[in-house]
Amino acid sequence: QVQLVESGGGLVQPGGSLRLSCAASGTTFSINTMGWYRQAPGKQRELVATITSGGNTNYADSVKGRFTISRDNAKNTVYLQNNSLKPEDTAVYYCNVVVVRAGVRYSYWGQGTQVTVSS
Image (tube, rainbow, N blue to C red; front, side):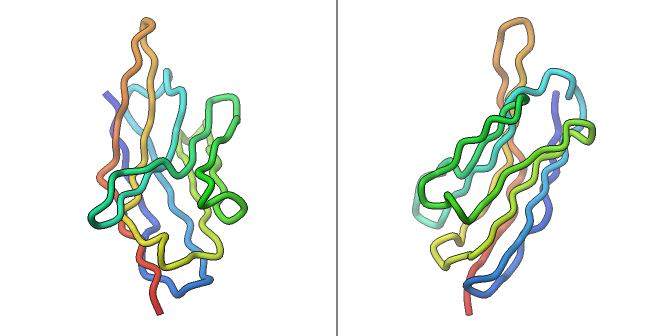
């Protein structure tokens, strides 16, 4: 099992910045991909960014050039630096971790952290 604890959400004005963190604990030695997803009211959950154990990153087109995902493997933590925030970035942001054990992929989710972009 893997437990995820997110932090860093809050209220920010348009153009502002936030840094989200997600710390994993438990059976973390087999963590593969770490990532962030978000869900706005009335919308489906969508991918924001992912990063593999080798450091390869993938971003949604809507956040490219504004958000940066990174990870600290020693701390089993993934970060999301959100810059130039827009009101449409308002959502609950969820951390996701994929673990591979004996060829089977397991997906774990955090509890979510609210990001609100408003003046």
